[in-house]
Image (cartoon, rainbow, N blue to C red; front, top):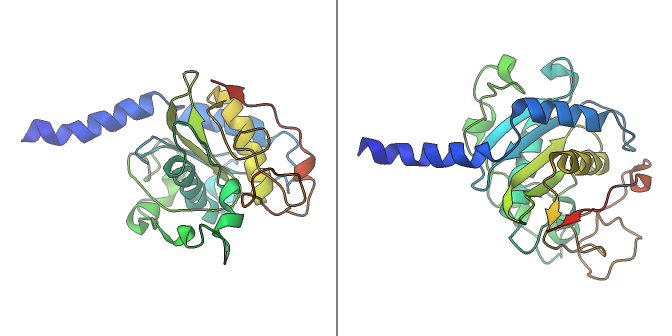
Length: 235
């Protein structure tokens, strides 16, 4: 009986072992945030989850947790959970890809109200630990669905989905750009396929050519759409 209770914990530990830990997340996210991303040049939150939605790491780029929007801590976790929950071995969907389809009249309207955040996980613990290696969300499943830019599934060199990354703290378009650069630095961007014209999960801005309708994201008012993002590696 006792040994069987340990199995979920062991499974979680193994899943997170394949993913960037807190130190790597913090360093890589900070480096990506310092680049030109077209937003407001704000500090960021980032969350990594495993394939079962368990939070593996939460980090921020500022000196302390109050240096970036506090609400974006949970949003970054929502984005990671969404990208993980709605991406598959053969099709990756970023949170940006889901925006148009979840608007009133869209084919996925209502999706944003499914899989609610576990508030007991989201707001538990001492705020002094937020964004540290001891963040109270770590090791727990927060849930949540978010349908604007900043969430990307993670795929290893074999094309296996190993989890997801969520980034929040700036405009949603800049969040996507920073997440994209962070994922590339993790070398977890071996894309199996997607809905963008390049058949990946990149953001598709309104007004851009799109072969498949229903997956666009509005412009954010800055220069985010002019940021040159690297090509996703194919498995």
